[in-house]
Amino acid sequence: MPKVVVLAELLLRLDPPPFMRLVQADTLGMSFTGAEANVAVNLSHWGISAGVVSKVPEHEMGQCVINNLRRYGLDTAHMLRGGERLGVFYVETGASQRSTNVVYDREHTSFQSLQRGELDWDAILSGADWFVFSGSGISRGANIVEIAHDARAAAKRLGVKVCCDINYRSKLWSLEAAREAFTGLMPSVDLAMSSLGDVHQMFDLEADSHEAAARQLHERFGCTRVVMGIREGDCSSSNRYGAAMFDGTDCYTGRSYEIQIVDRIGTGDALTAGILYGLMSGYDLPRTVEFGIASGCLKHSIPRDFNLVSIAEVEELLASGGAGRVKR
Image (cartoon, rainbow, N blue to C red; front, side):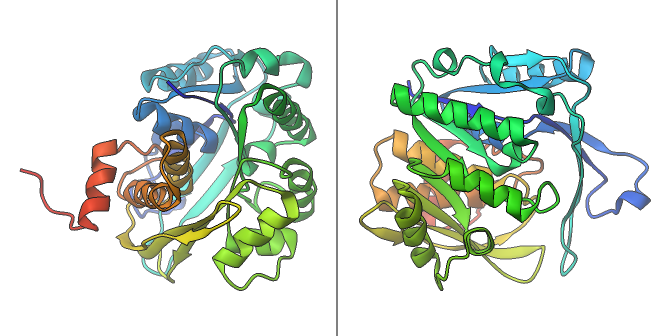
């Protein structure tokens, strides 16, 4: 069975009732998540062995996180305990022309206290096929960027493939800090995930299309494969969603879907999980891209962060093109 290891900050997500502003809400829904953990849960749900490297508090909230990850079959052996608190974010779900708004409370967290000497990456990555990190996690400090460098170096020594999702969040760190971090971490990664907007502002690319941007990232950093998520629309309730992937030789742009959005959070992670699943399953370029897009597409229909759809449901969407019929 393939094995994936992710470096992740685990977070408490709090939601007011659907479409309410925080100032209106009397109650908040609670769940545990994190961008990289979303990828791991998705893959575990599809039968891939997945483990999380992180640090959470020693108190009950930290245990809640660990219990939640174990519920979905994740390996938590490298989840360290300590630090002050769990990071929190609040999600105000948008509608029509009002954007979804995310409010972060992610300072002084246990994950930020993680230090290089606490992790033996050669042991952690032993037997792994892929190591995954993203901008959401490494934004938490220079020490986390250094830890990602250590993990990437160990992965290369051990022959473990590396997946990097740029996943830039301007509310979490400056563009300058993100550019410096990714300029050091991107060279020769095996799979880079991004979007046209992110690569334009971060790397000053002059690409006028998703395919051109993917090729330019490959040329600049030597990334084996580059995936560009594609989202079009001017409304929070519906978008057109797709992706393109360059594998060093060919570029393939997959089918796009007109989607109605229940929850947009975690959809990029579902795309990443779908691409990784396709690569680990030996799919060719078009099938890998189509599987990833369908995975991301279906995640838009599920509340909260985890993409809890089956492989059969992804395959059904690929076969039907999205009829959305009632199953009886």
